[in-house]
Image (cartoon, rainbow, N blue to C red; front, side, top):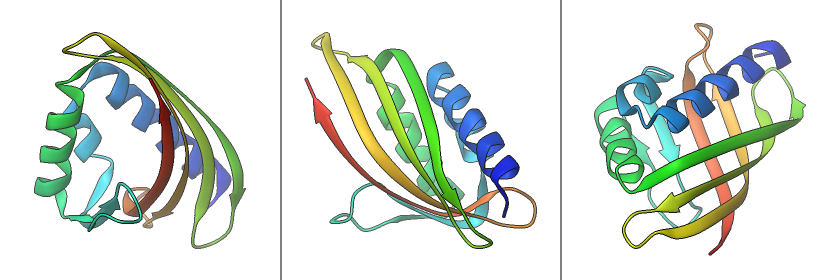
Length: 122
């Protein structure tokens, strides 16, 4: 894993989120990937579970913005600080998220594991 592949993955993650495109998001993950949304939740395992999660989340969000800053990359993991904002529908609640990703990419540039920590302001 290197900085360039991590930045490319983060950019495509943001595109998929802004487009609310669960299939495009799922294409960023390895077949047996894990996605842990919060440290207290069991990770989603595999493409089907990850795509279903994305479908549910993005169906309740509009006007999505996403940005990131890479904090560090080594051969195994990339760490990024990210921020997102969107309107939760219903009820039209403006939401801002601020979080950290720890991502492992495989040799093909697909995510093998994603762990995130975030906090929201509404």
